[in-house]
Length: 433
Image 1: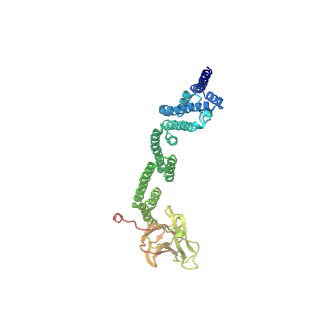
Image 2: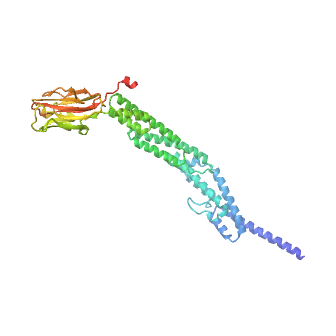
Image 3: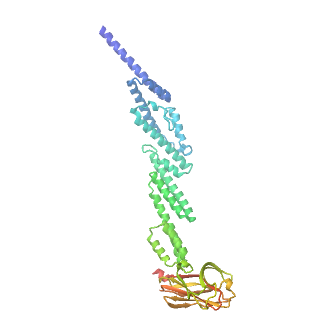
């Protein structure tokens, strides 16, 4: 009989323990179902000294975390997120799970009840929530704000285990195309305003931005290269047209722009070097003269260089060399200027004229040109009532050129404007060859 009683008592005890255990699990389930984070934490805290109960609680909490991950990945927030951003996610989490989950950036909810056993899964859930938030915000910046740069950044934060990952990649691609298009339009504005460097810098920054967000920028590079090539050709064509019209300065300016856009283009480099051969040699620049000498030591006239001198017909002449009598000088004594042409040029040209203040002179003035010691040109005499006269003479193969400025009689002064040495431009037949 005693043995039977003992068995009955043991059975009753087991039932009692099972009932207690079931009661404890029920408390946790009720707290989770109530969506009350504080209640869950309190139930969990009250069982800190009971490992067997805590183990059951951990199982329930782990099950809950897994269900949230599964449910969250099953949701589609696209339509609402396009206008409300991550607020639609926050509303869903609040509606479905009350205070069980932490607020954004917080450590509340049931965080205190997540044991080491559930820690990795909890981190997975937190990462997923963050990923979903980035996806929703990306949609908003894409669809509503049209801020493609920010949208690309946000879509790049969507995790691979997020059910929205593939769609985020697709949307990021769309944003990238639009971002590139907007960038190119801005670049074109810069280029039309002749701010090439700003355009290039903008494309460089766009490429760096895409790379920083793990987006392959081959498309941007391709479009950038195509744009640079297109604009470079436009400026190269302008350069060729200007050169064909013998406007070397404009030709070189345009080719410099072409080279800034495509610095490794050997054809452009070659053409730039070619244009450079045809840059006029400015003989009115005193720094370009080898020497300035007088016929004898008692000579008191000189040749001076001026930016502007007004002619006897009241025209402002530029880049002038002026023979000027500052005191008594012997008649017919010259001032000589020598330049090194180095055999690079074919013709020297300029305009001979009387200054306004010498228009009533009784004398005359003229120049003689010597190429490597041989007289090659003598100008007409410039006298009272003479209009400015265009002069030119051949200097092909000449190394050193000397021009002698001669006054006749009591001559006050005379001048030559825009005296340059120039290489002959090729004719069309030569250019084709």
